[in-house]
Image (tube, rainbow, N blue to C red):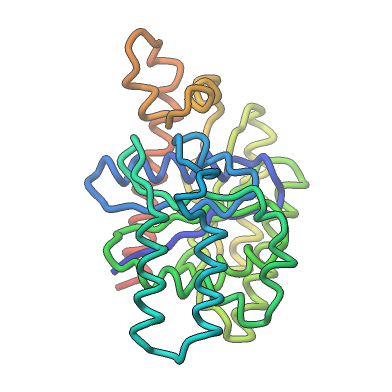
Length: 285
């Protein structure tokens, strides 16, 4: 069964794209079939893996969602024509990356989502897409850092949510907003997404980190979203890897680099991947 994981926080710069990229690379290296969906109009994830997001011959996630919207409007439910139309554009949109996973690239016009996906039923478009993608073990969704129809699409489509935060108050406020939005969608029975946990990311100040982790534990206990035991450390090598359009794991394999500078963060992400698997296994028993 495909496991769809949304990586989210409504504050930007907390590491959502890096985390999505690294988890995709790790699970692909484990032999899992992985698809990443770039729902961020900044298209950073698409750029990091050299995916084509401005080639008119290769549909982006925006193109796919708009096409599905039109097909659903013009076709009778459950017709072969609808399924054939969806399958065609979905197949053409999927690109294989050098990291070993597939991607549906983002599009810069995703920032216009409020205008393009304003119908009440549009919130189910991504779920419709994912229902056609049964061959994957994991589908990872990199979300935009702001409330929008796309963000709600992700919460409706995904099985699980991983919430990222840094130790600062603004990032932690973003966590609370995500939890609030998910509760509202579940209350209205539009989503059955489960929050896997909160990931504390990119820390330098140990005292500040400890205080933030304690606060997240208190919040997690009352909102059923405990933080992961894994905390992602900060490493200069992570920025270098992105500048080279590589995951940290692919960067590690580059000749001539000092692997010691990234070993800590590599281990952190590997531990996170294992912890995610364990939490999902426990939830699905």
